[in-house]
Image 1 (cartoon, rainbow, N blue to C red):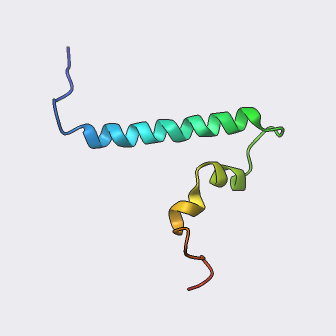
Image 2: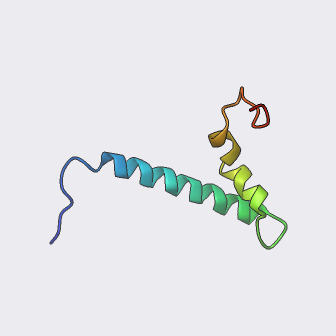
Length: 63
């Protein structure tokens, strides 16, 4: 039997949990959608892509 090492995996577990949460958000959005597929813009909206790229107080066009 293989056992995962104790310690050192907390970061990976945190990342995995975040990914699972995002997948869940996509599944919920897809099941609620009227169309067959989510558009790229809707996926970005669900995953909050724009929020990750630009903080709320910055406008991406201000550079």
